[in-house]
Image (cartoon, rainbow, N blue to C red; front, side, top):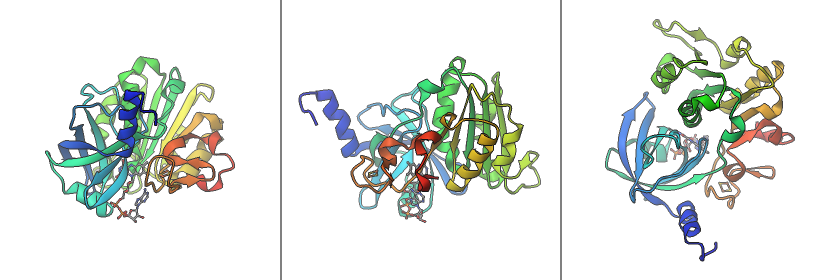
Length: 285
Ligand SMILES: Cc1cc2nc3c(=O)[nH]c(=O)nc-3n(C[C@H](O)[C@H](O)[C@H](O)COP(=O)(O)OP(=O)(O)OC[C@H]3O[C@@H](n4cnc5c(N)ncnc54)[C@H](O)[C@@H]3O)c2cc1C
Ligand code: FES
């Protein structure tokens, strides 16, 4: 670390030492997922790019990697948004917090989505379950700069209609020109009028120009294999398929090795990868 560059010191400190964040909004989204808006206590901007994550911490409980779900293009840049599923010790403790409570924030970490490379292209977003949380940061970025991108298709898959996240927002985006949205559920309920079946059943129905489309996939590991097969069946090349990998993480800094796949550190080299970058890395998918 170079102490002669004052700005660099501040930037690096935010990666090593938690900044204090204050929860300014909490919303119960489903039975297990809550939305939180957090403001860094010194009024600083997080400065995230779509696809990056933060390490959130609570004293005496621990730390967990959580994707930033808001876009850097949002109006109030002094806050950022997350959506968290309660699964264990840290996430249950986070769900018990309310407006005004404090939380530690390190980051932002990782390589975000390649937004400059995506510009001028058609985009096919494919989200399974909680995958819409990090993907929302990129979709909102694209919607805020709509003219920079071509046709947008959003495919969303979840277990049941009650598990859908951000569906009101997505329906709003789908009202924009050249923007389509389709949702499918594994199991319907009496009110559900949409598709039933796994997300790959939607892919054959999407009109893809393989020379000007990027597919961006985020979801549970099982979804990747079959989604990639469907996209490649349509002729989409590997360097036009982008995905976000989740691995167990500790440091976020490329030091502890918890997130390592072969020679890649998911926390630094990812979590976003182009499919051609993962060739030969058998356990990545
Ligand atoms: C880059 C990244 C971004 C993430 N973004 C989000 C997000 O936006 N929202 C969200 O709700 N969660 C997200 N997660 C997952 C989140 O970090 C874990 O759910 C959390 O660390 C669990 O901590 P816990 O103490 O509550 O659970 P624990 O008590 O540690 O574990 C409870 C259960 O969850 C499993 N688990 C724990 N961590 C992970 C993991 N990383 N991947 C898969 N299973 C795990 C354990 O095996 C166990 O079965 C992300 C993970 C990564 C790596
Ligand atoms: S989380 Fe420590 S090396 Fe990636």
